[in-house]
Image (cartoon, rainbow over all chains, first blue to last red; front, side, top):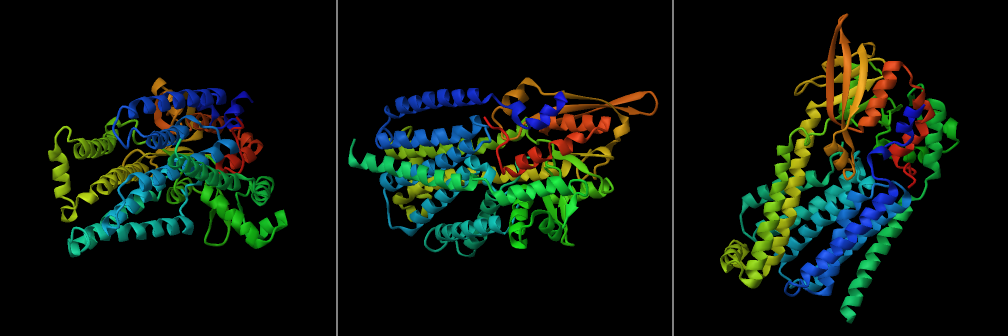
Length: 190
Length: 318
């Protein structure tokens, strides 16, 4: 009967105890944020600004959280979603306020592609339970919409408005979009 | 603190709050799903299959509601919809793709598959991790180019070259282009990672069936030609190295080795080691129970396992 604990406590035997996970997360968060503060204040504008330091700290915590916290309870998952939202908002806001914005369509296309990639990769990292590993129409719809956007932006970069590569632009845009789509369509972690 | 910083913090708090609320909504218990899981556990575990009409009778819910809940269980990999309209129940420790699951069922002559998974491709071949060097090189290039552009260090030549290769040599495109390069580096590695996983999936699967024992692939494009019948199993051992133990604290899927000693002929014994298998303790336990013919745990813990796989409710309560 004791062996049945393996099934009763499925997945738990490999992880730190919950208190250790929380403690480790707190220690690494404090150390990381301190390191970011100390490091970035020595840099030049806009990197030594408070907003940049906050953005970097939020992204650091968002990247660290799923590596350390392996609890599968509601609070842990909900917090993970919250961190995804915070990291996304911080990145977008920082880009909008700190990068020299331009109406140049190619520049906008490049920013859109960057945000699509960052958004999807962060989502895979932080909200793993809600990534559609079993592919269905919803996963294909999401990936289809994102890929259409990615293709349009890639066409902007490689086509007449950007590099002007002619028909090769279409081929390259299709190949790179397919690569994007396959990377975004997640493979099972097992 | 100036107004800009306050607005910035408010934006982060807004993003945090909005997604926190979304996560809360998604994580709220689904009574329909719970009812459907209860019905599966109570009525259909032995047959391993059911139809919508069976489920209607067992739950008293209407067809559309049931279909919605079943689709969620399908996505979680707990059930499979057959062409005939029947649903087949998969054991929660089966992590095979649909195609490989069908293959396992076919090869084991419709046996009850208790565990099925692929060996992790990276740990036996650490050189594959070199693919992550692409991101490291990408990040280094982007950072150096940006520093070269803003401070002229180590030399403005790098930034000048980067500007020269931009469309129409437009300097305003440099920063978005560098960000784009950073993103493409991540996408490229993610793409290669998917290729490696798909390749590994072709090669290293291990399947444990209730009656067929252990079946495993021995070579590329193999059809589970490795077999250890349950009567042949002499001993089974779990071996998690220090390295595996450490990385298991941080990876989403825990890994370990499972060693099976089995009899060949009257006296001879052989050893097969399944390296870097997902959820090795559970694999060890499944093999032990197949060896001893003691599968009562499947029913006793069916609900826990189904919820664990469907993420319908927490298993690790913290």
